[in-house]
Image (cartoon, rainbow, N blue to C red; front, side, top):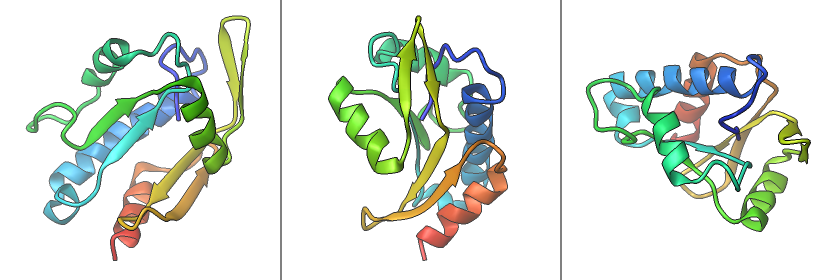
Length: 137
């Protein structure tokens, strides 16, 4: 979960850079490249519309693959995003044009079940890739 205008370098921008690193790792691993996907969901449903997310995401896509082949960015209607955030244990509130929020990265298995939760931003891309690998076993 992110929002593209996040001003805190240790929050959304850090998570985005970790996802970019994880996407490069997926691209380099045929077993993961064919089976795992990354998804960043914006909770800024008014500003982060598809064209904004596309422009933002293009800067971070791994080279050598079509854009968004492994990692997509999405948003939805406010209630849909709120429900997904609650499922993941993410809290957020809009305050004066920005968001105060917790940090959650979740891993969902091929069966649709929650397989892992990374709280905060102190995890590494290699750890997330390991979580993805474990979820696929």
